[in-house]
Amino acid sequence: FRKADGSLVIAFLLVAYGALLIGGIAGLLQSLVRAGTITLPFGIGYYQLLTAHGVLMALVFTTYFIIGFLYSAVVRTTGRHLLTGALRLGWVGFGVMTIGTVIATVFILLNQATVLYTFYAPMKASPWFYVALVHVVVGSWICGLGLFLQYGYYRKHHPGKPSPLLTFMAVVTMALWIIATLGVAAAVLIQFIPWSFGWVETINVMVSRTLFWYFGHPLVYFWLLPAYMCWYAIIPKIIGGKLFSDALARLSFLMFLIFSIPVGFHHQLMEPGISPTWKYIQVVLTFMVIIPSLMTAFSLFATFERYGRSRGAKGMFGWWKTLPWKDVRFFAPFMGMLIFIPAGAGGVINASNQLNATVHNTLFITGHFHLTVATSVALTFFGITYWLVPAMTGRVLTPRLNKLGIAQTWVWVAGMTIMSGAMHIVGLMGAPRRTAYTTYGGHADATSWVPYQVAMAVGGTILFVAVVMMTVNIVMLLRAPRGFTEYPVAEEAEAADAERVPAVFERWSVWIAVVVALILFAYTAPMVEMLNTGVPGSPPFRTW
Ligand code: HAS
Image 1 (tube, rainbow, N blue to C red):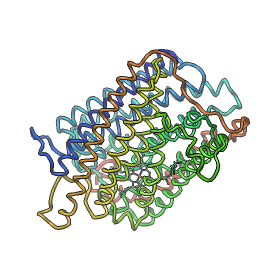
Image 2: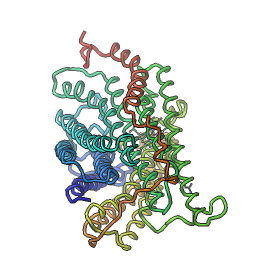
Image 3: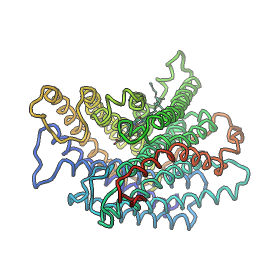
Image 4: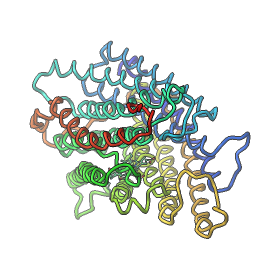
């Protein structure tokens, strides 16, 4: 890696891990408040900390890590350094995003943007918080342009050939992000900014929530797809095996692109103002988006089994013993995969209309996303970090650091199992999410939740230790001995496979047209209804 390209990637990773540390401190404090263990000093509020925790962990850590990783993947697999234009766009995007991130964080810490990471209206933040969000989104689009420029250059110079798998996946992930963020950008620009500056008096709450979830659901796949990039195209190389099928991996990514957007209503199943027919249609589409994850599970098992058998493994699960358990580059993502099995099952429960009525707005949902994004995705990102940082800085992962990485993974898994397990159980007992510690006047139900909330705080404390361990590991990685670290990329099991990738997979006009058609189908009628029934004077359109 050229130094200039490596520096860009490292800049993104450093902001990501800085956010993880501050978000981790906020997470620890709010879980202790919730358990009734501490009272916050200086008028700091539970919801203020919860906002900082959600924004820094779920939005800043992930987005920065992902953009840095996507850039690295494209540089590595297009076989050259970044074009000058792409590098410049990367830095400009980074700068714009970082201005926005700093402003947003300051306003959250000043208690002027205590609106949680979903910033639902009618909760109102300082207008500068929304202006800051626009910077983050626009900055990320500029970074996206840089990636597309590099991709376009590659395609132009390799006519008729499929692009490298990791580059293809990076392009799909960025396209998904851009299409999704159009929704949140529209909500912020057309609704939140005029309303928070006081230019208009009311806001159409249903439209704002719908635009948020139009973005919010594909957002979770924007987090997941980079983890899948690692699982499909990097893990096989780390274990010494080969990718099961290049075409299958591409197809699953295209399915995410198509089906992950028109499904936002599954977050709004309990909301009034949306007809059951449209909710039903979006639930069906939600079940479509489960399929590419099942394809991924199949492909991973096949990769592990094939590799095991090539090493002489016998029996149905003999391959298990042949995997490199002592290598943190494999172990951390593997624990992420393993936990994605119950995490995904929780998602299927949430998506089922009747079951959603039981779990919506309870701690079950909080448990679900701590297993998905905060375990499967986060552990995979940690696993990537152990080779990405050394590869970008010309250093090596020492055996000692490898051991520290394995220890960090265990601590994270232990903390998350306790915290998320307690959240799932107490959620089924009816405990609401996003509520400061309360005994509900000593009501028996609320009293029965307390032990679980204490377990959540114990898990949260263990997780905070894991965040500190990860921070120390990053510092040590940056100071590791100099040397060469490979950026692992798997070959396909069949050498000719890349040639067999259907050309239509990269005909973007087809896929974008399908995506737009599905979005229009799933959203037009319900949106028109929401606009027509909005409060008079509420933006975007209704003024009568
Ligand atoms: Fe979700 C709420 C439905 C996946 C994140 N989700 C959330 C929220 C977040 C989130 C953050 O339908 C809360 C938002 C808020 O603040 O209100 N989710 C789903 C469904 C899936 C799903 C159907 N979610 C995710 C992923 C996330 C994420 C991924 C982050 C990265 N979710 C919902 C619904 C709600 C929701 C409702 C709203 C609830 C409400 O009422 O508010 C699916 O995509 C899941 C499919 C996954 C699988 C698992 C496949 C397994 C694999 C691993 C293989 C393992 C191997 C290792 C090979 C079916 C790929 C094997 C080794 C061995 C030895 C066994």
